[in-house]
Every structure is written in structure tokens, then in C-alpha cells.
Length: 117
Ligand code: SF4
Image: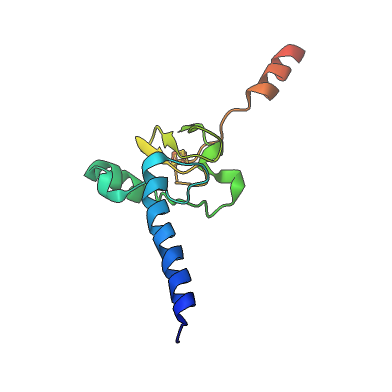
């Protein structure tokens, strides 16, 4: 495949911007990040836990079973930002998932149930 000089320049700029934005997303936990963890920054124990629990940055079970809806997840700066997981003891993607996923309690509904009873 051959590129004109203009196309090569445009592609080079796009790759450069991607190369700059990925580490920034990892380090700042920016909104809607695709990856919240740099494995090089995790301890052996943290890496082992992620592997054991089959953590993935994107839930294979869809949005119903994402980290954002898990009781062990602490939300980041905003809903789409990287947060933290109590089980993994480190950063977690709101769209991620692992085998320890547990439904976050729905307090609003429980309050209504208590009010009736
Ligand atoms: S326990 Fe698993 S599913 Fe729940 S927040 Fe942590 S990594 Fe996500």
C-alpha cells in the first residue's frame, strides 16, 4: 500500500495523537477511558488477583454486570472515569467485570420497602 506524502503526514499525526492520549488516559483516569490500568504499575499480588478473578476492562456480560454496578466499585471523578475496586485493591474500569461482581444495593427501592412495612 502506497501513501501520498499528505496521507502519510495525516496518519503520522493521528498515530502521534493516539500515542500521547493513551498514557494520559491511563495516568489521569480520564472520562470514558478504555484502559484504567498500566500492568507495569501493579504489584505481583494485584496482577495475580486480576488474573484469578478474570478481570477484563470490558464486561463480556454487557452493561448489566459492569464494575459501575458492582458493590465493590468506587466511582471516579465522573460516571465514565476510572474508579477503584475494593477486591482488586486498585484501579478499575467502570465498564469492566470480574468473577466477584456483585449487584450494588438499590437503596432507593429498599427505603420504599421499609416505608411500606
Ligand atoms: S469486584 Fe470485580 S466486578 Fe466488582 S468492581 Fe471489582 S473488578 Fe469490578
